[in-house]
Length: 88
Image (cartoon, rainbow, N blue to C red; front, side, top):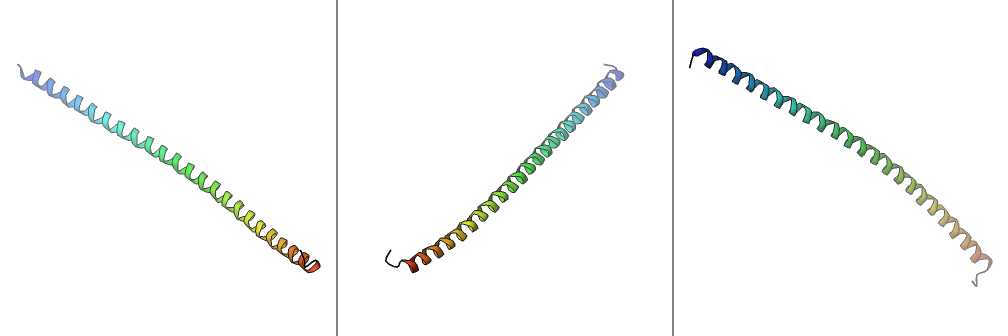
């Protein structure tokens, strides 16, 4: 074979290798971008769940406080009833 054929084969091999390397890099960059997007979505979902849980916690605390106050009022009413009619 002539020298020029070997040169053409070598250049073609370098070009193919460059295309494969660049394609691999682009695929990796695309995967990384997709992973970042997914991570961002997961972070937003976690923040939303955190806010929702915090709201529910606040509401339940408010209800517990109300229940305690009502229980205290009921105890006062029961004590008053006991003063008025101690037999019951």
